[in-house]
Length: 120
Image (cartoon, rainbow, N blue to C red; front, top):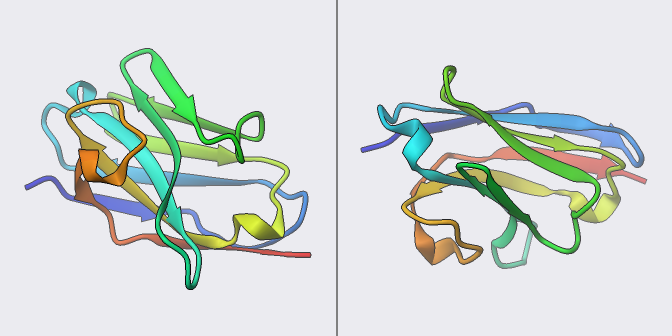
């Protein structure tokens, strides 16, 4: 079982930046696809970004504002979020899986989530 722990969420104003982190217990961290999803109240969980080896992909709604990255030595996934908007408010989850996918069903391990709130 892979354990994922997110951190870095908080309350910010529109236009601000935040960096989320997700530490993994996986021994083969570099071999996993890692992703960020988010879920706003009353909404379904939605894809944000994913990375595997040197490939990454983003949801249209965050492309150009968010950057996903990973530190293999530290077994940590990051999400740098710039120019935050109120509509980015959600619980953000990191996930790991076998392949680079935008569908949450492609990921088998999930963290507990971290709240990001963007005020206008």
